[in-house]
Length: 74
Image 1: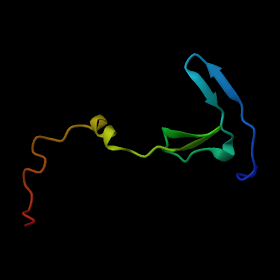
Image 2: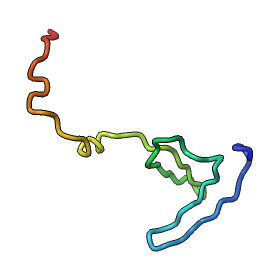
Image 3: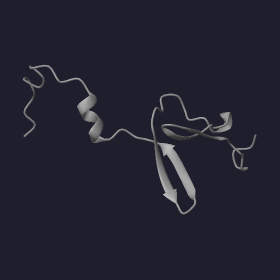
Image 4: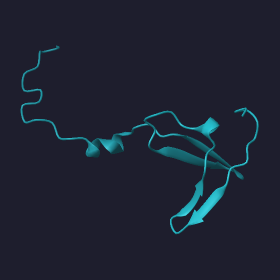
């Protein structure tokens, strides 16, 4: 399959919404777990989501002694 040629893909409806089954040629790289979807007229653009500051709350908290010892930089 050619990535530049249009390819038909099925749309699947269920209780949660619609899903598009992406052909293998459009598979996202390993590690991509979320995407951003933008609507432009009748078209949709799907791109890998990058981590944003909002995901910081999902990170483990720092230890109590985090940065307790640090060099002066001024």
